[in-house]
Image (tube, rainbow, N blue to C red; front, side, top):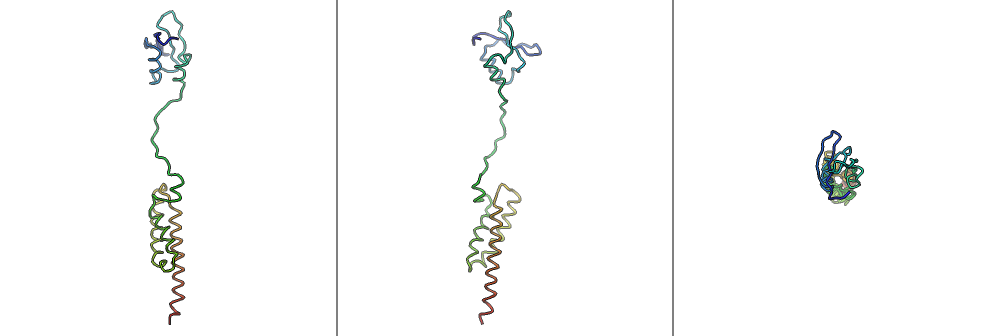
Length: 163
């Protein structure tokens, strides 16, 4: 078929569109206006109609899967947000303060803050799991409890012996 030839598009209902050249009919197909059941006939009444799927250019357009724009989804943070939960500052603070609480003198002061930030971090994670940081929050709580207990035991052993 020559691209200069004019064609009619005939739908299954008998409705006719055209005459139009093959490029225009291809544009109609891209717009979804040419169904796969339609036939194509040269504008010359003596020509034989044939399926639009018999024309390679139209078959490629009509036979292609639909292209509908989907929702725009933000990419996942990946593994980095699991290692450093930057969206859950309380959990991250609990972790670092819990590590600082392991220092004997600072443990008594820092441990309650590690526990408190850990609880806040767990609540933040519970409200929105995409914030990550549940492990950091629990680690901060555990380090805070352990360091507070160790410092308290040391003080309980040292204070009676101060006499």
